[in-house]
Amino acid sequence: MYEAYWRGMGDRCSLVISGSEVMSYLGGNPGGACWFLEPELEKSIRRIHHLVGNAAAQAEDGGHVVVGTGSTQLLQAALYALCPPDQPEPTSVVCAAPYYSCYKEIAELLQSKLYKWEGDAHNFNKDGPFIEIVTSPNNPDGLIREPVVNRPNGKLIYDLAYYWPHHTPITHKADYDIMLFTFSKCTGHAGSRIGWAIVKDKEVAAKMTKFMEVTTIGVSRESQLRAAKLLGIICDDCQAFSTNTKSQNFFDDSKRLLTERWDKLHEVVKRSETFSLAKFPKDYCLFSDRFYETHPAFAWLISNNKVKDCASLLRGHKILTRSGNRFGADATYVRVSMLGREEEFNLFLERLSTIKIGICNGI
Ligand code: PMP
Image (tube, rainbow, N blue to C red; front, side):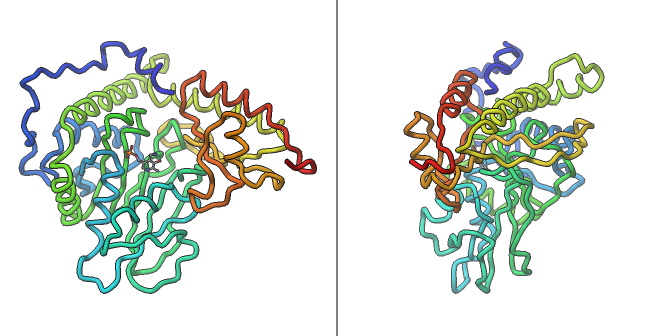
């Protein structure tokens, strides 16, 4: 979805790296909390959070920046860092359903002795230490979330991948012990595989860094430089926009596009007897200085009671989605991406509007 915006930026966003540059494992931050973090990237990360106001990420806020190969690697690093190795039982990992399907996969992949996936946080009633992942806005349903377990022996990881003004109003400056962000969802450059964590505790930041050191000996320096450059350009444009609202800025442009898409989808769903969608409340955005509603990266479609397997129904109409049961919900739900290319999105709407299964008819 964002390709057109970046294409429009032309050579301003190009980055030339000669054959002799960034060759070493070691970059310019050997004494820092995260030794492989490129200083330019750290600067851009702190700057964009300062401008957007979505997270306490300035040096004076006391947070350490840790870079990862996507926030996917950082989540694994956080689990490693937060789970003491000497516990009789693995630490429980939970997240309120519907949850981002990769958490379960990540937590179960290595059958670790450190941690164990325990599923939906709403049903969690075990004693002992636990980690709750709080995703806000949530993937798949776009809702703003708070922790649900609320017991003293728990630790929280906030996944704030979508807490950016094109997706949701920025209502407060997030200030939590571990906050995960990703270049993938901020600018659309998922292929660069850059994520970052803002971590309050120096020892936790050091353990997360150790995880990246052992698993991948750092994080691609080329990718970090590209992320630094593009985040910096977004910041420059946001600053220019604050004095001249005719200029372009990434968040505003992307929000406009997402709003259009959501309006079109709501129109199609309103005419359908087969599907429905939740409505999101409006909130005041401190960054944009106005009220608007969340426009998530995914639509969480619910089918009526005659459809038992919504993903299969849609697949039959050449629409590929991820079934609700992958997210700890049931198969009447599906998650659909809102971020595809324009022609894909229009085709999706066209196909969706042809599906007519009334509540009484059945299939
Ligand atoms: N967290 C959430 C909530 C996500 O939706 C995604 C990507 N779908 C990620 C993390 C992973 O992001 P990355 O590309 O940085 O690994």
